[in-house]
Length: 358
Ligand code: SAH
Ligand code: SF4
Image 1: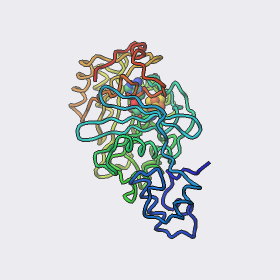
Image 2: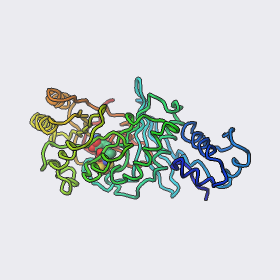
Image 3: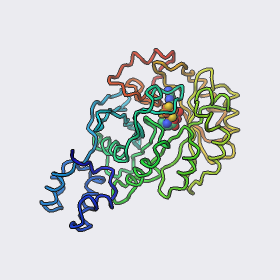
Image 4: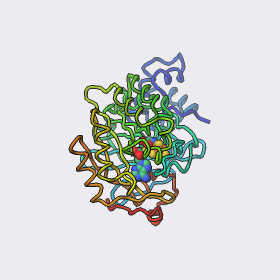
């Protein structure tokens, strides 16, 4: 089996090439891989033939082939990418006016068990390696012809999985993606989202190179959060907010909170006022996501007027935005990633929710 080199940092690549290669050769290959996203080593023209042949004998780029791709009417594309062990993982490309967003997975499945999320129904199959995380970004960038180190690209670790339960690999992937020598993504354009793994939030805050942090709040009280996010029993809301207050934000940074609105559960005016109160002391913004329904999800999507009323109340205290659902028709929206092999819009209605036009 050829060794994939994606996921190697410069020093690892140097070691892989062997001591008899001058150090600048590793840098040339590193740049070809992460900056130019070269998959075929024969296209690396600035290295000697012998080294190209050595690479071809021993290695491969490892940029995860596309197993299937679904196109939404709104321009979003959902990908199933093939991993070496026969599994697949999901990633989503979302073009927008002025910027593009890549939504990337950190695990195959997720062990956290939030009751509104389809990925939860899979359980955890395994963590992704740093290389598999980086390769999702490179593959989607190549497939959509995005500029290398494009200023318009945002990357969010909001696909399958709980990134903070795979923190070492997420941090390593962050170092590679944000290295100006390589992929060159700005750390301001890379975000991880967590269900609230408190000790890992503290650990993340100590990392010198780290993505921005988003926290899935999803409830306005301890009891309500315990109902819909069982992880709250282990990591209570009160302590989660304390960890957020203690989080060492960089000068330019603010926290993002996410809030999935579940009709009749956490979407009342009183909930909105409580949420504004909980976040009052924090430098943050709140993103509202009306539930994206799915088979087996026992909640309904609130009406657009309810979402707007909730937003209006929170806005009196802090910046608050409504996240537009993308790719609903191909099961690409938040919480819908469950590795479905087909896009089956008919299933959208079996959750009892109402699919929103996007
Ligand atoms: N595990 C991480 C990141 C992936 S989930 C986390 O939970 O934060 C990304 C976002 O999608 C989270 O904010 C989550 O609350 C939201 N989400 C999950 N299921 C959803 C659904 N069915 N509809 C809308 N948003 C959902
Ligand atoms: Fe996991 Fe996030 Fe889904 Fe919760 S919402 S089950 S943490 S992917």
